[in-house]
Image: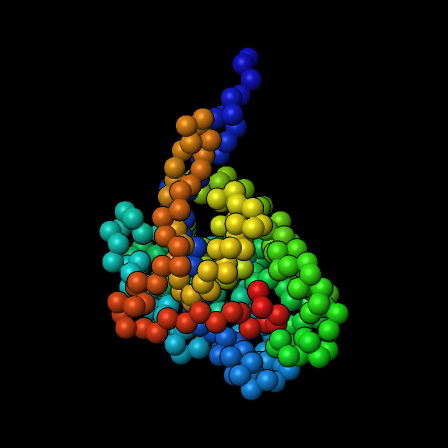
Length: 259
């Protein structure tokens, strides 16, 4: 029997893949207030995973949901994957509430926010005061490789997302997949899906903060050698919010040191 070709060994990709950052959260608002006041700690009474959407975040999510619901039925998402964090779950629920039928929903802990460890809920001023060595180390190493004590680097997030990407290829080939998660998760998926380098993904990250409820999308695009691949269609797309008159926000996530 002939050995399988590379084409045979490569699972096909979803027909469409949408990556969405959650709507503005109460933590985003609290972070802005703490940074503006020079406070060392962000005033969030809950665990980071329990932080809900703000009222504006709910409006953003509903505006994006109307954009998805306006798609023809044969183009809407069929699979919904979400981070287990409250703000992502709420965003996803509001996005799909107008879809009929709704996509099949799966929660995946690998899509959780980047973990900040000992720096959780600290502002830049708080980190400099309490962990000056870590502030210096992050500047030296860079955000891609820097791992806060008890937390994760971008590389750590990428490691867990590699298995998510394998899972999506195996389980959801040909499906239309909507994934709702966090800023770093979306950026790390770009790194993986587009085969980027550290310098390339950080250059993209520096250009503009990823907006809340921004859409990044990919369409299936086979390579000439038969490999399954995807092509970038949209990045940081916020037209659904702008057309609805909903303010666009771009605050970093609130858990700690800038992502």
